[in-house]
Image 1: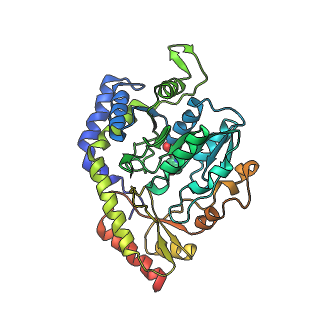
Image 2: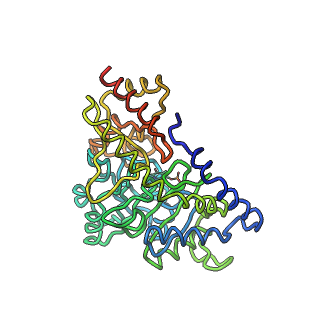
Image 3: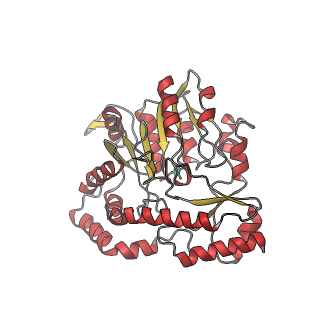
Length: 365
Ligand SMILES: *Cc1c(COP(=O)(O)O)cnc(C)c1O
């Protein structure tokens, strides 16, 4: 059993993906070829955002988002420590300060009720992470940001395709950032990412920053990066879009099926999904009391699992300068319990049943 099955997906889409790759090889426009704009138009339409700007990775999307907002050294960003390192990393890379605010125990998303007291004169943005594929409390966070004149950057790397109050993840705030890393809900065959915004000036800034701050060829009006997504990867994502709605449906069904099957097991609790949103299960993650024992039992049964994430950023060595030892107790607690189970649109129900029975065996056997 694979943790993320990408082979079945490729087998289903092979004709279209291969043809799209061949078209790129034939026209030879490997950088900023026609597939780049085609993908940006398709993803803007899908999310409902006015602009989509493809970039080299999800990390690059977060970095470029901050740069487009004219983020300055010393500026602060309120974010969750219970995330992949990229979220905090881009803030520090630009000389800023990540201000870590704790998550909710049920969703593992930023606890909006704790945000306002952490705002200072240096705060520029709030950066919630839509962890495991469920959007954070964006309405509350947008309202706080509006009161204080802050930007909101959604880290939607795990939630592309998710809905929140009838709108798509990525199009819910000042800027939304996503990743096309192969195992994300919408992936390419390498690195890729995108940012979304309704703001014309921010979109223009992001387009310039991704090509070394050029407003015209060799006219560098700002400092930028080499941050383009290449044409081949855009072509691959275009090929994946043919099946994406079906995949979202399948992820929802498999997620609901896991959640129903795992109710009532001793020492296990499932993620809370709030009623005004869905979860695309970028990871299907549960909380278990005796994680290392359960993980070993599953491994012995041939079932791969992963831990997203074992240590929150505010306790990582690289973030020692931004550490607040006791500021995020829930993040520390869930980091010791979370366990991600095999999940992808092509997970078979037979394999899913094997995961569930191995878990039941480990917890009750
Ligand atoms: C994957 C991920 C990223 C980074 O995306 P890359 O494309 O790998 O750079 C950022 N934040 C979160 C929450 C992620 O899961």
